[in-house]
Amino acid sequence: MCGISGCYLFEGNEAGVYNYLILHANQHRGQESAGICVYDGLRLIGKKGMGLVTEVFDRSDLRKLSGPVGIGHVRYSTTGTSELVNAQPFKVGYSKGELALAHNGDIVNSEELRRKLVFDGHAFVSETDSEVIARLLAVALTETDDMFEAFEDVMERLIGSYSLTVITSHGDLIAVRDPWGFRPLCLGWDERGFFVSSETVGLDMLGVEERRELERGEVVWIREGDVESKVVRRERKAVCMFEFVYFARPDSIIEGKCVYECRKCMGKRLAEEAPVECDLVVPVPDSGRTAALGYAESLGVPMEEGLIKNRYVGRTFIMPEQEERVRSIRVKLNPIRDVIKGCSLGVVDDSIVRGNTSRQIVEMLRDAGAREIHMRIASPPVVSPCYYGIDMATKEELIAADLDVPEICEKISADSLAYLSLEGLVESIGLKKRELCVGCLTGEYPTPVPE
Image (tube, rainbow, N blue to C red; front, side, top):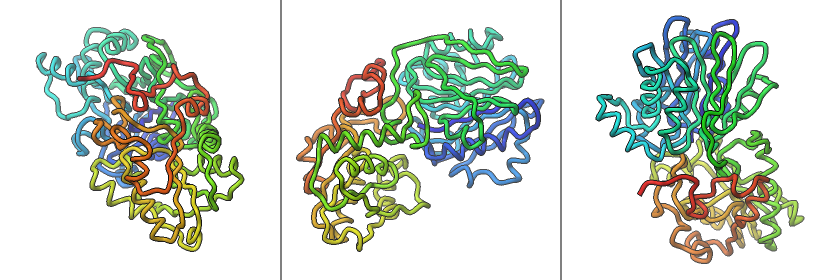
């Protein structure tokens, strides 16, 4: 999934600092690596490293990343291994200068495009589809100085999800959202300049009030203090439903919808569809908390924090290795025995993907003395892979791909299990079903997918 940032300042050279702050607000979108690249008035300079934003950059780094224009990236790998060589932003040269690119998403036809570029003599330094986009853009800009024309050519070739920020060695800042609008991207502005963030929380961090979301297929080109915008290509809207269910921060606004309110509605609808007699509703922190609040309110049952999250452990779902995910769940969560002992619990989580978390949570709660454990999931079963930037690439790793709900219930050792319906999910989000990508729930995708 990843998080991206960008800024164009009218005065001053604090582009590194502003991107640092925007990335910090988007840290939940990627925890493997972080990078910032700035235009210092003459050239592109940058730093990237493995780890969190606060681990990669210190004050001396930000002083060195001095310039009026910059972009940033936090990575969650879906294409390419979790190594420094795949960290972003990517910088590439072309006949008229250099560009650096940060990418959130996944390109479905990246392997085919990479083979063609290699055949044409391009030498790749990474395994990522993001470098494919960067090199396609460099080729297009060799033929034209017009950024809109260049992206018309690039978008014609790309299939998949891509929100982008780009800077050039001429001091331009470009923000792009793919023609389907899979991933969020927003633009803000004030007297300081223009700012770009994957989620609105990045603009909140800076106190930027004036803002809008990029339209799907839109290219925003900022140069010499002026901003131009053009929708260069448009397909049917396909906003990722998983942004609303899990990935985005609850205080973000996506497609005009408050993520917090959407998740609370999911919990209320889940209570209508799958009520349970229980003593307490217990959320799985953090992403299950808002839905649990709606579920508890609708049932008239108290919600208690029966599980406490270690704040120094990142999101286990987006960790790159299966063994690491399993090991981290026990480190991440700990039950409060005095709260749950002897109680029948309605445990609310946002989703079940692989089943590792749910199985261990049930085990932990039983060991802590829970009398009954009724799992309630605020989204439908995930039955198909995602090709657009979420790390669930094969059916084999999805517990609901081959098991029905009673079988999953037995597998995770719960007393009962129920999911929110697809209809309930769509109505809770407040967009039309045809405006959402629900491919991982139905197996029906908005674009052609690889064999």
